[in-house]
Image (cartoon, rainbow, N blue to C red; front, side, top):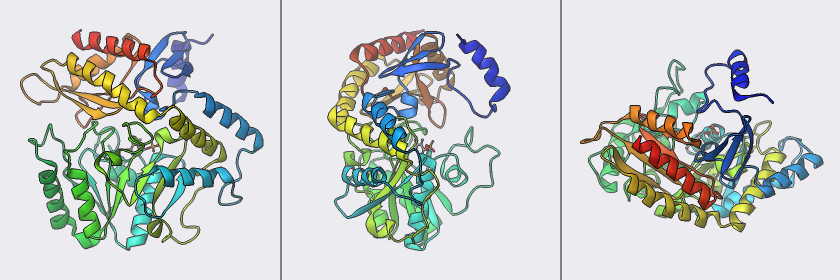
Length: 422
Ligand SMILES: *Cc1c(COP(=O)(O)O)cnc(C)c1O
């Protein structure tokens, strides 16, 4: 049997260095909350492949649906010869997203592609150029989405020049903005937008309801509704990037629901496909339908195998009530993280099964990326797969599959506790 060490040697000679991995253990198989590597070592999964395997890895319904579809047909291209599952996924997106207005949806391959298309639609529908994004935002790695993403290393460094007409506003980040209220932080952001961009130029205001790569930043209550209200009053399209927060992750189908938001457009991907690559843009029919026929699409967007997987994943979320499961995971992890707090843990935050701790130097809020990397490494050494995030690299984030067993959850938390103490 090939070992991880052998595979790693082959990888170094074959795979571009620019593609990194969190651990050098090569996967053999994975199930629910665990991943087993080719050396036979079992890992507890607090990453879900970055919030993708919400329904668990190799979830039975997804496996069955993919198997059945792959035997029927693998690809026709929806733009060439359409099929039911694409329509059914769009119907699900319309039914599951907040907003009782008339909606339409379109399918793509990746999160970045969904975000690009949301911007295309907003610009086309409004006839305006500017896109407003926020500090610490992450929206992808294509040229336009790099421009939308805030952080230079590793996402943007030496990859410019970037797409124009992208403007950055200050985010509500309660730990780091002196505890501005949601209304105050929104006022500050709106000042920047109005003074530096001008309301009539804004096509879209694009925001993650809880920031993902940027540090699991939960804005102060009232911030998102105030930004959405400004967009509405100024004829700009309010786009919620729910690629990481969507599909039951935060304890609701979409995180926008926590504050009663009804975004004009929502981008989805990650958890949507149960592990297969699929993404969507869903929102107001008058915006979505503004684009001329043939203006949106792509060879693989809404591939039938990915659509079958998405329908099976959504059915699993409903059947197992994974929104409730996410809230239950929160009720276990959140108090455990509070109990692990020491003077170097500035904050425990997040919602549902999207939780994080931010590590700082004791006595202030100076970020501590060194300890974050050390704790992370200690977790990996002990068999717990965790991820870091944050503009300052000082946030440990926890994204277990929503079907993880209490036993695996408990074992994972035990490893984390020991790693924080070491
Ligand atoms: C992951 C992510 C993206 C990009 O998705 P890809 O599928 O990696 O292109 C965009 N926005 C958010 C909020 C994400 O978490």
